[in-house]
Length: 508
Length: 118
Image: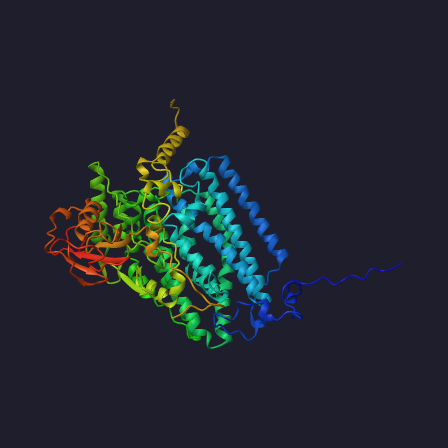
């Protein structure tokens, strides 16, 4: 009788090595150049891929186990939220404007990041890098899916959620996020890692997720809070990957420094422009506010980011070029963008309002140097006009920045009364920008940005030729239903009625 | 700086004038007047008279601004591509040297009542 030889059980570290590093075999009948054709053209020099430190050493089977456990918890809570009419515990259905923007602009970004990491995992030669990118790719698609499932419950009761995939591509404010992720996913694999892995996940992610999840908790949105918890441990892994990646690039060759610094400058600025949307959300869209955008920037930008760049100084990295201008703008951006969103709210798949007196007092306390001086007069004017029955709408469609695709509504860094106008000519064609930093990004790679799909410029081309009603159909906006002021909306009417039904015995 | 790429990278810009059915875009801003959040787009034929751009483009768009009726158009100063510029109201956009996607700005002295410098 044959005796079975008992095999030694591998410990976690050995298992990890067998399941990842051992996959990086030497090719025999194809050259490495042909297998990894995109790894050199960006100019980054890597001498030894084995120097890549795997921050988590997670093998696929443990990854599946952890993620499955989180999914079970998430969907259990989501089910109970749906079954107990959790949406009626929101502070106000007005809060959902923030969720609508998140779903239309950020959730598709998660999906884009999933595609980007899948590609980066294929294009990098190192086995450790490949596995880390593969896991992040799966994380990102899981985030996109769980977010869509989370808001699907709101979609049963409220307007504006119905067509976020089209709106991601076609509507105007979503193009801040769309163009950001299009730019990153069409870059080379190393730039993609700095764009998403480092700048977005490491430098800026806390500015997005912490305020967003706290806002959800403060406003009774258990569905989004639960998503936040489910994503949190992934985010920690993503941040570590981003940091590891930048250190790896910088340690491999001194020639990498200027290239990496250029990408940090670029992606910090692109990110901070994109996050203006979060600023307006925090300062204006949350009925119960958490902290101001400026306070969030102080904590998660200035303090955390400052410490990070101190740490990276030993590699020769300095803080991003646009840091100072971003800091100056923190007293202004959320107001400037929200005033724009409100005056163009005939073209938004969410509702806006002039802030109440109580909210304006809060804004005034949070922005003592700027709100009463520059922004309150504009809101007051709009309020008076609405009371006179002539609500202020801006039918002048905005000029968009060729790079960040934001309306040109930002002011000069040192003059909040003057819009920032920048332009350049490339191959006999004019291009307009919102800031010096966006213009610099363009000038560095003009061939890339001349292709930008600017939604407002497209509106004047075939097949719409400037027809605003046809545009509404094109972007799946139902006029008078999805757009306009919250006070006049069906969302408000329904929410108030359902809430009242919960606590009274009125008969219709 | 030319873009880094693995092979020849040639593209056609997306917003060339040909795509606008013979018209051209002009971006307009009123300096120190921020009630209207951003420069706005006018899509007009290059043959349009500059006075028409003002009467049928600028005036109806900015109607809600209480300063609008007080403008003395003889005192207004203009910028094109951020440089001082004097338009001829009786000439066309093309004859005024306005090209596709030009940005023009106008400045109204002593008239900065709403949300401007005062």
